[in-house]
Length: 147
Ligand code: SF4
Image (tube, rainbow, N blue to C red; front, side, top):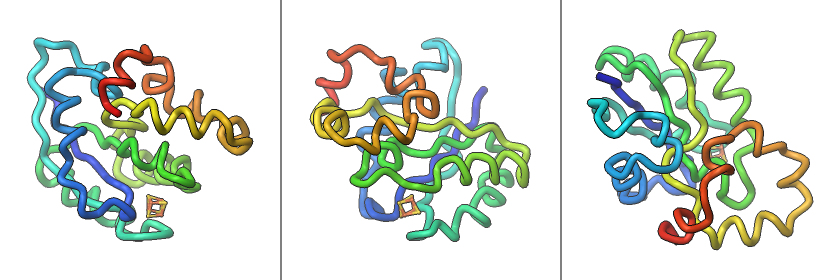
């Protein structure tokens, strides 16, 4: 059983999590790392608290109390405009302070966001392909299905 917790970007704090929950069920996006037969449970869901992400310092403690075995930083951090500048720091901090692995991404990147980001210079500079490998490597058909 993998117990998943999710931190979303506070710019989308009213998000109902529709794409994330769908993606977990379909095992696509960053959730494709969990085989279809593997039992998974969402044990925590929160926002970063707003720039510069103060809630990231505290909310993983609550996730851990609920048995979280992994933290996912939601896809909105990766492809919101602009992408969150703190993704690397959040990942490093949570892994060091809470000893929980951090996966960058949740649901597939909607293709319409890819179309814009690929025109922008800072997308290349951010080396997002290395940071969110699973999301970036996903077939375009899946990204289209999440538009
Ligand atoms: S851009 Fe980053 S720090 Fe700012 S609200 Fe979004 S996740 Fe939080």
